Image (cartoon, rainbow over the protein chains, first blue to last red):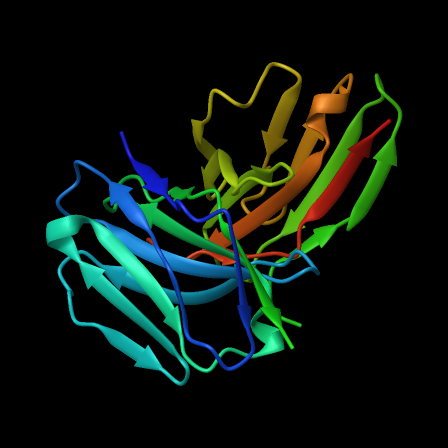
Length: 115
Length: 112
């Protein structure tokens, strides 16, 4: 069975601090995809990144970076120099191979960036 | 706007009433998905269409729920005899390629 665990329910940091959101996943598939989505108060899911299981290179996009470690089944997300606009709920998610690409979401981490 | 659209954005209904939601996918996207998100939880998969064929249904989709995609374009999700537990955000997503879903803004349902 596939499962995504986001152990941090809620995090608060002061603006300009760095913050890391943890994500641990379980899957039996050899090919799978990992995602991060942002959900601001408006409720819309905003796609941030997709990573396939064969690509373990870390990725950086502006203030965002992602650390994929297959050995520990983790796909952590770091925001550097956080800003108030980063306040949102962040979801880590997983989908399987090509025949079954429904997305399994974690429960989310609510991030508060305090001014 | 060429993204996924959903209508209505908000729906308030009384327990026992039927409701129907509509999702218009991105043009030419052959796959369409429905998810449900309850308060404080991540979205959960409900069902999935490839063109007009409904290929998978979650156990979450009780007999009171039915989804259609009659012409392989827009889709509807109907809930009959709504219950308070049906209150949630209903999200639609579409894709052309595997593992690349684009989500709509959702329909927020409140059952009184």
